[in-house]
Figure 1 (cartoon, rainbow, N blue to C red):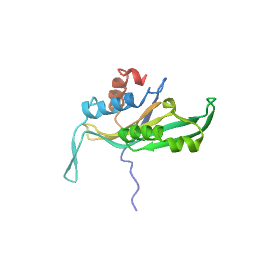
Figure 2 (cartoon, rainbow, N blue to C red):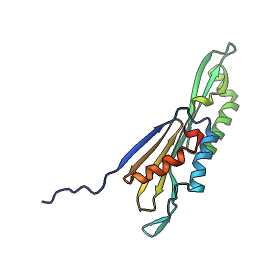
Figure 3 (cartoon, rainbow, N blue to C red):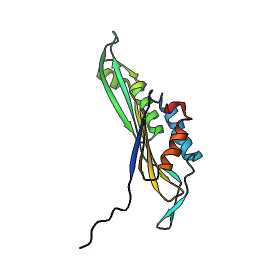
Figure 4 (cartoon, one colour):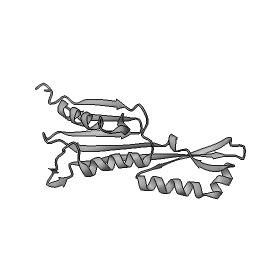
Length: 167
């Protein structure tokens, strides 16, 4: 029998943000800008003859927190809403805030607690070297994973250093 031979060494690196990304608009602008602007010089490629974008979202999710306060500003309940897209997130927040039947059932007025919202998006990237790696963004960290070439991390880190929201 043959032995297993190591084929690659993949790495993961994490940047903890000193301040969470301010809001969903800032988060979406950052992620959308990467996809449209391709600041890491990723390259298009084919999988089984099907063209793939240089950078694409492989996963995303957005969660809003809505609290219900009574007449004395005491929190009497809360709900969260997880949405698959930014558009769905914004629509869900609007719908929950406008839902008077829900507010009555909860016993208070609905208030969107935006600082408690969570966001995440993972980008799949194809490096010019042929490597595929992932960059996952959340409100309080950026994670680069499945890379082996340290030049990939250097490129992303150099770019991230120019983004005040990623300090």
